[in-house]
Length: 345
Picture 1 (cartoon, rainbow, N blue to C red):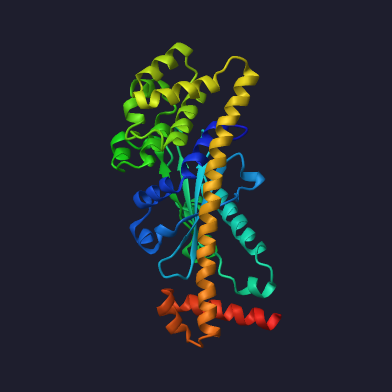
Picture 2: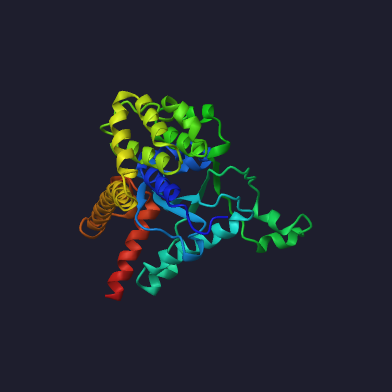
């Protein structure tokens, strides 16, 4: 068992699943149909920050999104959680439950007034556990932790929740390629074969499939190459042969990425290596902030319109809901909150 998170794996996970297009691609292919039908995927937005406590840092990394339901009543927290450890976790529900409690506590902390806390609706959490270790991970229910002899009368006192699980290494190449042309297939192919550097050397056309426009995907290509180079202990000559075997449009990025990572002198290499990741991750962070800001501005615009229609035009919630295109319960709850704030002031 690793004593601390494996940084290259952690950074690759955050740089890839932190991209909204990869997250949406995953959700569309991997979520249960009944859940996917309830989510308004087009309004998915990245949430800055993490809910991984110090106790879980050796186990998990997370990338968090918010996604409203189509009925407009809830925002669901969709959390991509990456399992660092090389050994399988026998009781993942316990770690996930701790994570979910921390996330809900953080949500309540952000609410200022005690009255608002008492009536606040917590965001449901859909935990998605991504694992790419070599050992076989057999998913089982939390109930099984307590043994088969547990009386039915005790089930009501046990926490019951599920998680979406993806064992990337156990997926076949054919299964991954069925996802289409999105960057999720490149992400999964690299994660699957990262333990087999020789395979990646022999199949660059597969690992980098559908990346015909490197200029628009430069950051993604660099993070893919850097992840491979950092996790493969290969001779310089072997890497150079691999770079030469890549399609011409990728070759220049491969050579420059390799030169930066394996520059002569460990201090120089470390500094340049850090620079690559910090620049790419900073761009991903900025993109997430911009998406969050746009979503927040749109939400505020709609809320202001509801306030105006109710206060100035004296329209009823049902009529406002039809005009705005929101569920009537959302409008009524917003108006109730507005009245309560006016009373407090």
